[in-house]
Length: 315
Image (cartoon, rainbow, N blue to C red):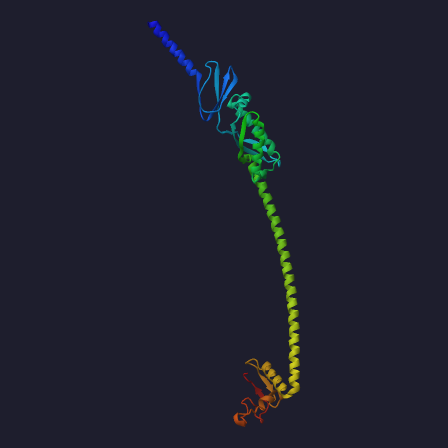
């Protein structure tokens, strides 16, 4: 009986081991390839519990999620002979497990192959571009080209390249100072050229403005002289008509103008003969008062018996 019990226990253990070996589980983030003597016989993409032939078939698990590959920084020369240290990362996923297994078998081999493709494509594309392409909007276009080209090469081996991104593009340490000084000198030269062009344009604009100002002033002066001449002519015509109608009033008006011009300052001193014609209207003023009576002579009138002397009127 004891031997029977031991045999039964061994049988149960063997059945358990065989049963355990026949069962495998596929996680929802995985996909599996069933191998029989090293040859693929089945692909399982749906998650759940599955069965295989124990000791004859093996299972290889592959990721369904998007994976990342962060490569080592590469030193690359651009089209304008600038040395750059470029750091890129790649996001990819396995879309064809069978093709992937036939081409690489292991994830390490696939990562190594993908790294090589990205590096070679990056060198080839950057060799066509200027250094400034990595600093402007052209950078997005460059990364899109990298993704497309690497994706086309890796697609036949069951890998879909989701994205290739340039994380960092720096100058080598030994070149930074020299390139910085060269760029600074170039920018200073461009600034001097722009300032010179600005000064030249400013002088041209100022010269044109001065010319336009001179022309406008000349035109305005010409117009004013024309208008002044027309006004003087009209005034002369009016004076001529007045002089023709009343010569004495015209003579009185002209005398008032002479008084105003000669007595326009408080310190004016005149030495004249009191009986001079200049004082004619000072001595002959005899205005008629209300009711037709004659008013006394003006206080400004010079007495008829006065001899030669000074006259210092205030007005």
